[in-house]
Length: 151
Image (cartoon, rainbow, N blue to C red; front, side):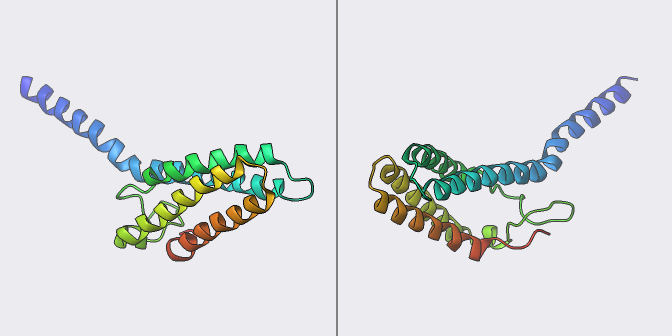
C-alpha cells in the first residue's frame, strides 16, 4: 500500500513540475505579445504627440514606457518560446538560431530607447523627431530580420 501511495505521490509531483514546463512557451508568448502591444501603443502616442501642437508631456511619458519595455524585452524570448505547433507567434526561429545577432538588435533598440528618453525630456522638438526616427529604425531593423507572419 505504501508503494502505491509513493508511486501516486511521485506521479503527482512529476505532473506538477511538468505542467509549468508545458505551459511556459505559451505564457512566454502571451507576455511577449502584451509587452509589444504596450510598446506599440507608447510609440503610437509619441507619433500622435508629434502631430499638430506637439505634446511634450505625453511624449516624455511614452518615452519612459518605451525605455522600460526596451529593457524588459530581454526577458521576452526565453528558450523554447519560439514557433511551434499550437503556439501563435511572429517570432522567427532566427531569434534563437542567431542569438548574438538578435541580442545586438535588442541592444541597439535599448540604447535608442535610452537616448530617446533623454531627448524627449527636453523641449527641442526637432531633436525629439530625430530621436523618434532613430528609435523607429531600430524597431524596423529587428522586425525585418526576426519577425514573420503569425504561424
